[in-house]
Image 1: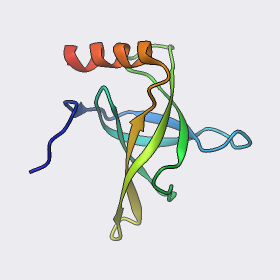
Image 2: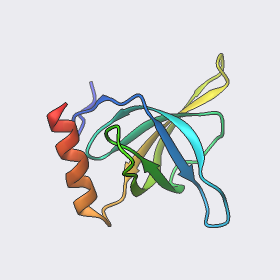
Image 3: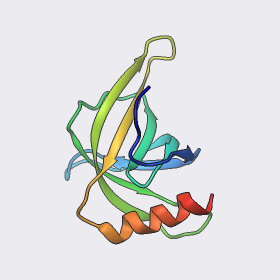
Image 4: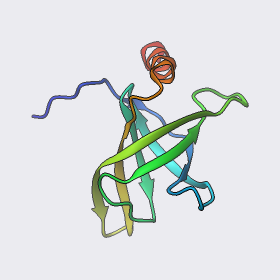
Amino acid sequence: MGFRRFSRIPFIRSVRIKAGSDQMFLGYAAKDISTGGLKIISFIFFPVNQWLNLQFQLVDSDVLLEVRGRVAWVRINSVAETYQLGIDFSEEALYKREVIRGFVDAS
């Protein structure tokens, strides 16, 4: 059995992702969240180690949290023709990780 650095909680929300500076943000479905990252469902393949810009809301408010994340792993669901992606949040904005930690710990 694998060891996880961070506890995960269910996080069924919309996440907006932009893969490059010349692209638009598109909506994806999140499955769970931890202080270290997100698991999302995508109809688009993103390769491991690709950096993404993410926007999402932790609670029902107008405040969008913006973070960068790296694709850590990809699993293909051939029946649904989708991909599960593990996204690791970057270390560059530690205060955002603390906001996420507070949300996870309170849930």
